[in-house]
Image: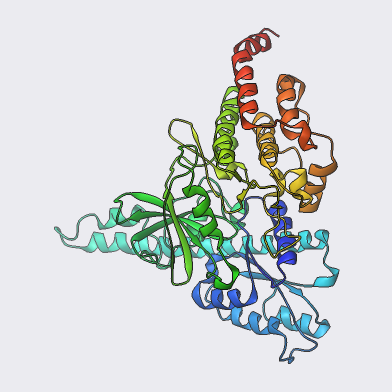
Length: 486
């Protein structure tokens, strides 16, 4: 999904709601100038659903309103995304014209509520689903025809002809313009949530080109966040695969240090296998990139989806606490601790990633980025009460996020859910602390010390968490025996 909006606070409001509506989707935000470049640089298949927020003017001929002009431009794209128009002004005439130009819905910005947004997005995604189904049916028909033609050619070919041609076709030669990609275990597309397995291989956006970043050969996209895409790439200097994180928008020289530069600086000072290793940082053609170690086993989110035992849950909490101890000793708060940002090594150890939101523990840094007061950063599902309120953060905010992860691993579900991001954030602030089921009540004291609403009631240091978890692990065999006997 893509949000186009110049007002940063409103864009973040939309993004938080989309995160709750479609938790498996990747949601990006561009301002209007960045979107103009996006239209010229990328194909429409980089996006399934677009929320276009801008002026639509008082009439279809209004020269000062870019909304209709952008819809015309999108209509000319070879594979345009579905569009929900959110009008900063406009009237019935511009609404009708917007729909004629292909917008699925037209919503006045001043009347937009979370409920109306939810309805519009769900209707739009159903239309996207039908469109994708038609496209897949067409591709299947083309492939069937190609296979039939190849079989016919092979049957008519004289002995000694080109070997293996039929086998190549049957093995799955894809139609022109469709590049096969490895399927990421953690879905990255809004449409993927509506599709059967395998569809993402056709929908996932491909790298701009294999040699887009000098010194690296881009293979496949393996992940995506709000601001960047992550590719499996081969490093020419290192001679092995790396994870290459590439910013989605051009570097803004007037804005000071950029987010990948901040992440590079933060992680470079931490030398620990508990934190992803950073190899390289640079800027090419205006786009930042960051090269880091590639961890093929995947992240904790995918691991949780397969189910984890009580012992595995405690071990993961122990490893994450050890990683947080290293991060906090380096003077940083992670601020975006969640299962997708916990990568797994082959020995089941963890490596924290995505330090784009990390900040110094100096008592003076809030959860808002400089110059963007009121813009909350982080995932609503794992955000501490103080982060939801925009207060100054410290290490205990990361401990709260760790507690939410512990609850999710033990129970198989998130403690706080809702129809909107605001619903979820309000529960973090004012709802009763989550309670584990009776069968897991022996872990409730540990959970309570992690997710206490007041920071003073939480663990003070990661070392205290490590001690408490080790005590739980030591007592686990006896607890398992009692449970079996019961």
